Image 1: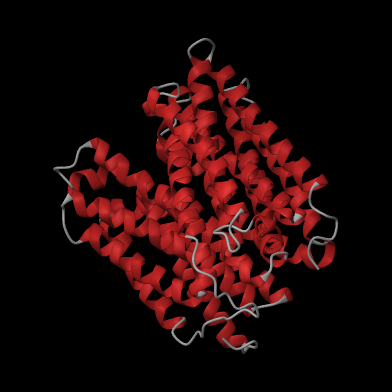
Image 2: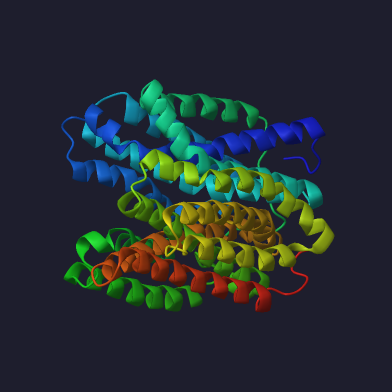
Length: 460
């Protein structure tokens, strides 16, 4: 990969990267909204199989993302990107070519591996290929592909499934994946100045996968299994004991799977922690949909429309956040974002208002959601990758994105479980207010991390 790219070739590379990552954020995530239509196609599949297929891709992505980031550092970022795109095509084909439930599950697993490879590898390519303002611009488009894709996934999936059929979601994904491969076909491999001749830490990888599998299953399936059931307690013990074992083993290895020196970087650890806590607000979005449909009588379509200000404003403010880095520095946007987002959640928490007044408050809240996340996205990602040594960017960016995934999963599990539990002993409006309030506390902690952990000049 040449150090300098022409304006046109650089933009085509960015377009190829964005097309590659929306295969997950827009297309694979569309499965969240088409479960009933999929079950009609897979007539022999039980509801349990369909529910498993919906959550499986995110689960696999979260478990293997750091491993894929480490592989991209050692084997090559471009190579891993190509493999990720090809796996996305294979996964989509497996889902649509037959009505066999087994291939549906395999296809969703393949899509999970694809996403795990693409996210850290493409961020690493951007960080290596571009510098300064161009890097921040490229990361903004990456964020637009990720956050924008997620925001439009529901509307896109519903439209295609309603007016054509759901398989076309993945046919379009395959077409865009092929275009992405074409746009990235001349991209040469990046080699950092630090040559890595060490043997890969397979022991560390195995322990890490076991820990992340136990944690992810507990988070995503804990409510169904029972939070205090024997299986859940076992998963927690495996997570705790495995984490301690992983730390002790990795400290004794010269070239560990995860270099803990990454976490000595205050800018990085502060940003990752804030990112984790900011993403717990996914739970508030889910709670709003549940509450308004159950208690206010909104249809799924109507409650989905209420989130439209979030989608529109996040796409606009991502670029504003990027521009603010040069003028004010990255830290200011990272610190201000939780304050804006916190006010947005507070507006969602005003469930004691009348129905009309509450919905107006929620619209304003979702507008602040979009502004808060949009301001945060590029400065946070830029800080995470630009303050990390080049040879560690793959695993560092993977940990950053894994924090997003786990934050969202924790937010969903804790906030919805709290709402359900409180709803059995008090009015549902009060239960929702308290559950939203818990999320506000998490955002306050995100603000404190951004304010006091990240150095004042984290990114030049």
